[in-house]
Amino acid sequence: MHCIDTNAWYSRVDRPERPDFVLFDLDPPDGEFRLGVRVAYLVRGLLEELGLSGSVKTSGADGVHVLVPIARRSNYDDTRDFAEGIGEILARRHPGLVTTQWRKAKRQGVFLDSRQNGWGKTIASVYSVRPRPGAPVSTPLRWEELTDDVSPRDFGMSEALARIERGIPLMDHTRNELSRPRQIDRNLERDGAESQAQCRGFPTFLVRYAVTLVTR
Image 1: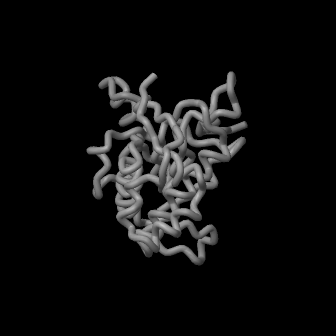
Image 2: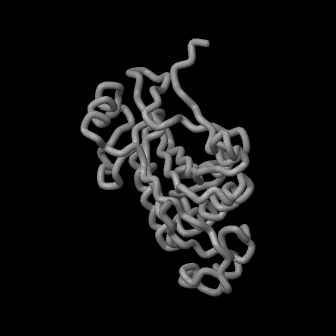
């Protein structure tokens, strides 16, 4: 009881084993939300390299959520592996800015938490009020609204209601479908032979799957 925020599964009741999206949960160091913004754009850029699109929202706490809607053909292991692979690539490309280090004491930069993709995990829903001072709201943003001067405390209940009244979409509902390619994604080749070898050790889901954008 006394629950304030609304947390939902990543899948729907008719197919609970098939998530609707991959989540990139970005946790910046205390007081460094702007770094979370910067890494959100790095995630977006790498997704675009793979032919994927994503939507962004504030977590309502201190982080940023990037959601990648997918066709419901993948399971939670797939989505977690994909998020881990993206995180490892970004951590290698941007050391000190992106980290996948689980232990907080050892982190340097923004933590990309791929483990939030999993059976039974929940996420603060779009426009959910969070139990924080000022009652901030987890707010979906257009990418152009996500700037260095944005603060998660900019979006409270009154701001959320105003956005809804203006007809701002909840999230982008474009789905991304996964299919098997004949070779490793060429977009990763620019990292060089050594990095390409490292990529071969990444989850098959990431390096062996080309992505075709579909809408349904």
